[in-house]
Image 1 (cartoon, rainbow, N blue to C red):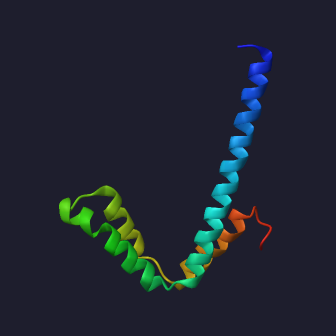
Image 2 (image 1 turned 45 degrees about the vertical axis):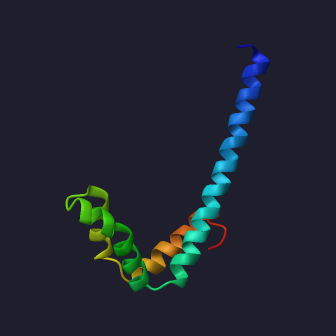
Length: 96
């Protein structure tokens, strides 16, 4: 690989990294807004519906049981903290 090819590859990888970082920020901001707008009960019901098939197939499913266990400690204070964190983190802290 020549020096020019390495420079092009580095530039391409840098640009891809910037694009993915931007997409990650958009997803975090959208998640923060969604968490702020929905009730904790809706989130708990949504997780229960999403994990129901996995629990039916395998009662010891690690991921489904983790999410269900995490939802037991999910309340309004957590929702506001998580949404604030996602909004701030998604924009690099410039929103808060």
